[in-house]
Image 1 (cartoon, rainbow, N blue to C red):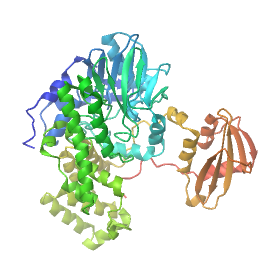
Image 2: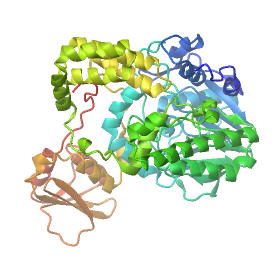
Image 3: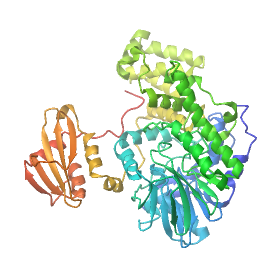
Image 4: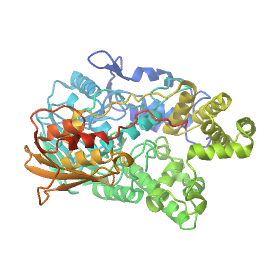
Length: 599
């Protein structure tokens, strides 16, 4: 810690460069007065770092909490600090092109209003989504009704929708831990998320793109603003793109190169990202754009100015992902497991001295495990780990072997006294899973989680630890993140609608059901057959015969209504009308508030 370059104020100078005005107060509300964003609640970060925070993370949060309108270069502006992400605005001939309109419509509208207050009431003449994560498109209806060109990488809709619908309930639940919205914003509580301060909780929206970017080198002009694109699939998102404003010598790096080590696998969950591809696309970006840019900016954090500094920044980011990928492969091929590799890999000295490689959002530890998972999966090869008991059953047996709950707590106290908090957590976790009513174990586990959180450099680790302590003391906290709006369900293809039903079938309850339904989508001119047998819900487009138990003629909107259990009028039915009721009867509902730190 003492060797880190805290004397280097370059990031603070860059974060303040081009400042025009703040939003004051920096509090954003819904129409009915509900607060969805409060950047002023982080004012305490202006003080010195307390003992309850890692100094490196405190520094990062001081940088991330800066908010307002900033000039990036001539004709390009950013609004930062009004959501987890930044909104960038590129001025055109008639109006302004918005890049990545934040998570929620309320925050996006406030950002646009702040821009217009200082740059004039310019109309929005285009939108660019850099990738398919909600903090880069969810606020779109706060800036446009959809009557402008909307650019996005090919495959955007598939990934924007599936991530938020298929695994959405579990991701939203885990995001409560990752961002810590229930924690007090204080030196003892939530002090940011590393990538930004936190996620806003307003209204999410989605307008489908009108222009697909399908190849690297593709050039598009919107309202006189020229952009040259680089597709970067499989990096920070399944579909993502960097792009250059050649006339302004400005490079947008989306979320592929930000001022921290990013996630190869976020703690909320996602498909494992490809660190190898990520690094190679950064190499390609250097070759394509580095000598044509005087400023590089991303959809999080602050810009980097100067060609030499841009190339050094991109090269170090590239080396970081390359190093983690290659060292993980080297060590797994020597027989080390993911957890062993995570202990063995450390950043090279040059990268360790660069603030932007530090793990405020991702971490070396969990990224290495993610790379291992991508190549070898969950199993570490040890047959002892092939068929373990699930957590509660294992915990009960461990506690019995150690002499009961009181003995486990006593052992844990010994390890706490020796400052081995990591093993104390393992022991206390067993004690709590074996007996949720063991108050002594719960209280002590909460205390250790708090200490681990206060010492974490990684913001999402801090939030996970502190949320665990919070729930042990106060019970499960409901998710406050906005669930997908009707825009998401309207954007589902028919195949995706049926896929979303298939993952809700309660298999054992449906074992003995056999049924088939033909769906004639009258507004689309398409026909599908779904069958249920052996608990498996299968779809087929354009079936050859007409032997289904039930035939329905309806629109796509009526299909969504029917399968969500709502009464829908105007649907033509032919055949056994009880079939649909039987299907709905075996559909399960997600549990949005499942337990995490208790069994």
